[in-house]
Length: 102
Image (cartoon, rainbow, N blue to C red; front, side):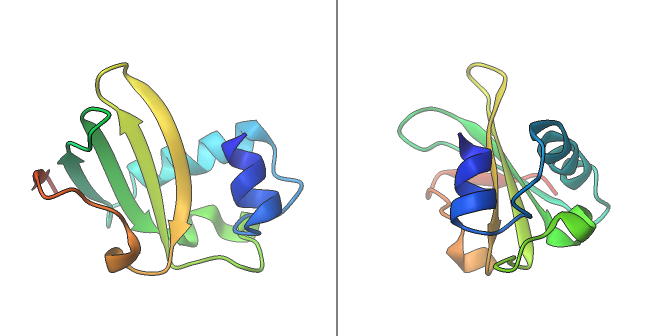
């Protein structure tokens, strides 16, 4: 569902991107040497955000690609919530209660 939103509707990734390739891109973002990591606590519970240059997606970027990729992990359930592209760090929603780890 998130892949359809970001790839097809938002055109951030190429439309034919497979779910497996989408997950691979999100994993690469998490280990990118320039990745920033922040833990914060929105109302639904604690999450980790990994923010990296969207160049990790390479040729899989779509025509509406943005410079940053954001990967969101749910700490309560230990699951991936989503991955999306953002135009700037200011465009990423961060709650006041947060800790930058990297």
